[in-house]
Image (cartoon, rainbow, N blue to C red; front, top):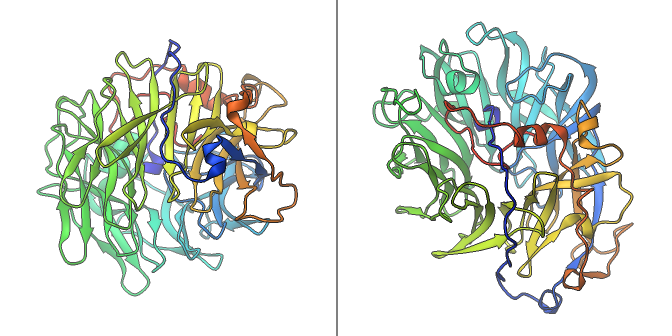
Length: 513
């Protein structure tokens, strides 16, 4: 499952030339004047430990302001999952709304849990340990897919195996994810590609609903494994599946393709760009359109794609052939990241109706990543260099460092904006600025909520309702944007030659920092 793959990152050594972002669309007079709203910064906090986290490329903040993720408790313990930050604390799923942070707890007997998706009407899904050890995966604690309803954790079960994990839920209570059955499989998505085990059982994509429980969605061709990542309000499901059982020389795993499933037609193979790997699956919108990345023949490079309902569309590259499709809104607008020749420079991009726009970087940076776009065409992500990164917002045709739009003195520097809802509220990651990142052995990453001081959020205490003109020379705060130690360590580590599927090879794919 995407949220448990242990990703590797490549080192970047050169600075890029500065670029001029291209204007996306004119909106109102304030935008025409290159002005931006201030934001109120809210530190979501923790559950007693040092850090809090949430999942990029997942819907962690709905339009009612319900924010979900996971945070360290005060209880020290051995990391329970492959995705664990390894900071020596058990972490629990949380929800935050109306200034209240609520510990969602775990399944009975479990020590850790994560919430990764919230629906329009407040249903939350993710996974939890259950106090049992999986005897087939090095004796690691078992994980089970969970649906939180009214604060209670519901174990969604498995398909006969030891583990499962949920990735998304819609407002009808339909949950999708992946679950193990009891049939032995040396190439199990859940085990081999996740933790390096070759003694697991088959991984199957599932759809769970309150009336029928967990349904196995099948696989493609003669394949044995599948995983589901997204479900929309119509009940369409997106994921990927093996198409056969023959391992490839390039990956050591069978070929897998993206799929779209619905109740009437079952699982549909969406094809490939000639490679054997779905590099990532990042969004299914309400129109049944999908965005992600697929490898090219030989699996050494990959291009972003959109499935438009009829065909795969190659979104192209900037010449580096290691590009990612990150998000698609319901209007079909796509964001992602493109690599330039030599893989020394990466820029966020915006794509719509066949036109691809380079979103550029902040002055002095050489990579950016456009993570999510909302229905108002506002884009959030990050921009950085070897020394620091900054959470950024693209709007009004400009890139702006979000650290310049919040009041000073919060004690946190924003290093990555990972989600924005349709009201313009932003979920970001911040790090303590009191000590340099290299002096923070356990890290200091905190989940941060940014509330725009605009007409849609009147009378917010602590909001500055004046406008900021970045064109007037608002300086970039590189200190506040300093990378936490864990992400910086990955920036300086070369990628292994024999990476597993979906291990990403560029500087901003540390999904679980």
